[in-house]
Image 1 (tube, rainbow, N blue to C red):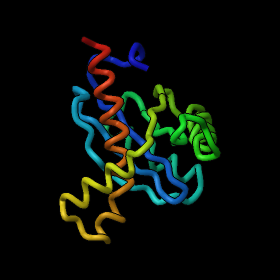
Image 2 (spheres, rainbow, N blue to C red):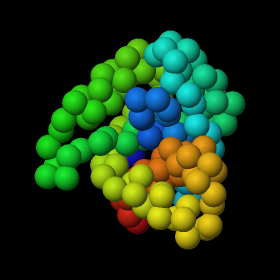
Image 3 (tube, rainbow, N blue to C red):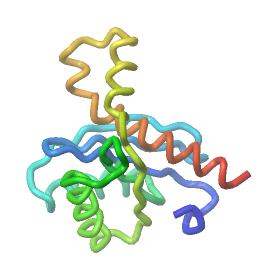
Image 4 (tube, helix red, strand yellow):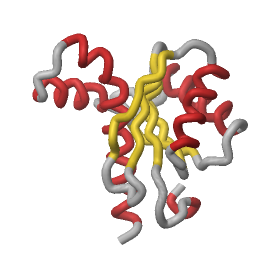
Amino acid sequence: MAPLLPEFGAVAGLDLGTKTIGLAISDLRRSVATPTKVIRREKFTLDVAQLLELVSAREVKAMVLGLPLNMDGSEGPRAQSTRAFARNLEKLTPLPITFWDERLSTVAAERALLEADASRKRRKEVIDAVAAGYILQGALDRLAQLSR
C-alpha cells in the first residue's frame, strides 16, 4: 500500500466485528490514529455506504483492515470473513485497502480503557473504535519506518 499513497492524507483503520465496525482515522501526516466511530452492522450495503460517507468526508487516502489471525498465525473463519469484506469493498471504492494483524488489539484497547477508568457502559460503546485505533497506529508506525 505504501507506494500507492500520496505524501499527505488520512488513513482509516477498521476493526470488523460481527455486530460492529470500529473506525479510526489518522491525521494528515499519518502519525496519530484517533478512534472515530462505531458503526452498528446491519447489512453490507448499508454498512459500507455509511463507512464510505465517513471516509469521503475526511478525505481518507487508504484503508487498513484488522485481520483477525489465530494466535498461531493461521487464518480462521473470521479472517476469511474479513478478506471477503475487503473483496466486496474494493469493488465500491478506488482507495487502496490493506490488512494489519489485529491479534490482541481488543485486549490492548480494553486495558487502555480500564486504565482511563472508563465505565463498563462507555467501554462497550467505544471498544471497537479504540481497537481500530490500535490497528491503525500499528500500520502508521510501520509506514513511518518504511519512509525513513
